Image (cartoon, rainbow, N blue to C red; front, top):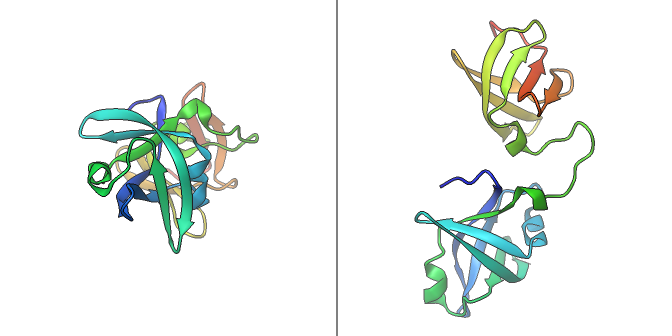
Length: 167
């Protein structure tokens, strides 16, 4: 159940301790930034529940959180595999020419010569730079770098790239 007003930031991967804390896997670039949000929308099994985050912390190499209403291991066990989302409008403002990946997913991609390449299915990190996975007549991996991405127009739902359509 995907809601367009929410953006997924992570998931609950397990339980931690005996007082209902949960282990968290964060998709945010700085992992502990997931704790910047006081309320999480937890989606599992077709339902979406708002839960207040009482406390979140780094525990060794893991992130753990205490959630309101979850005070023992058995209660928290039901949250395993729940996705963690927050409202899109609660994300911090970005500078010009910066976008959240969720804003780019689904946009049409065309070359600077107006050749249609497809739509952005998703983005991924490669270490060197981010890459757009564009699905059209075939799948293309296009680097998301300034030299290639010439224009992003959210209102038109379009990304213009300097890219060879045959590549």
